[in-house]
Length: 275
Image (cartoon, rainbow, N blue to C red; front, side):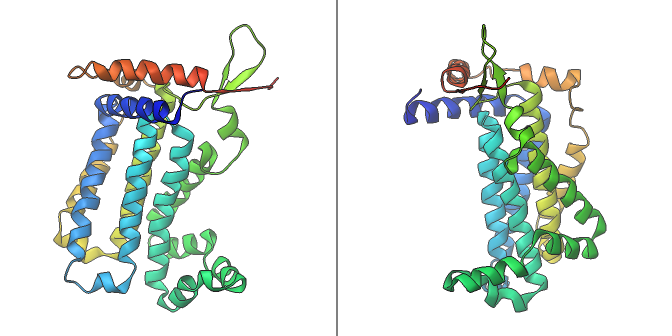
């Protein structure tokens, strides 16, 4: 097994290489990041920061960046957990903005076991999603598609998340569970779902803060990201495969690190009895 330092160094090198590849996907992700960066400063001197729900925009952005880094590193399964957090941060902020009477319940969560139960009762994904669909059917439906797909791919422990990261051990009937997955189809899907997550999270935030999206560059950047996403190669297409095969040319050191990470996927995998 690799040391902690070897694992971190290897995945970091892989992330740099991945961002130099998959150009159509990375373009969308880059624009979405710019939209977040344009939105957040627009809250200064508006009085909204003291209102509280602005923090959910920052948390959504932080989760988006962390999940993109995981996906770029080939750590696909954990990335789905964090992309789910990006969506939930936006949804919770949206719900609290529309139900300010629930803020005392949310902020008192750590006070007692009973307070935790009240939060679980008041803030259900189903209830929050229902309100989102009432405010915008298209954004609410989009949330449902992205959220459920993330869960299917690994944002919640399930069979598909487990089996999709198994690889055969040569000369054996056993299979191993991969920490790192650099297969083009799988990594492209992670980037695709990451783009869908960022688009939906920012769509939700645009319902919360329409003035800030209109006055800053965030609105135009979000529209651009939607347009760019329309040009992303279809899953399993030749264009997607060619994108994934591209390599960085400026820094050949990235390539050696990627080879190291591929090795980690083999050496650091858990051998499992799965027949």
